[in-house]
Length: 186
Image (cartoon, rainbow, N blue to C red; front, side, top):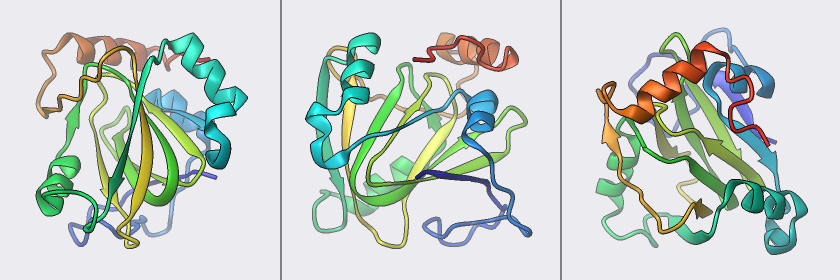
């Protein structure tokens, strides 16, 4: 099950947990209200026939998917890719990730610009809304295998912060000010 907490401000190894002292955890409902990030539990071993995923794909129009493995052994240009993933950015489309193996962290900004760390493990599916500032890193296991879902052909263009003038960011801020009431919720 996914865990979410407020991050400390230390700039040590990004793959560490980075809890505040004392740790400050969030419930999934709070994560959604502060960020619009959605969470679903999926049977990763039988994801092709998982009812929740099938319903999500139909309702949200996810017509394309692929798989990516992030590890030093499997990812070409590993060090530079991890650096790029960890650079704060946003996308014009949702970012949908189902964890099939391994673990890692998605960091997202809340409504007060604090970092929230989302630990994902096998079976976790998260949907990061378009326009939210976020980043990704592996944890100390240095391995994750995920399915990525897209509406139509994949567009995975990161727009590094600042990108506040982008329409997707403006739309995100509007929904955030409304606590994401009825925002894409399936």
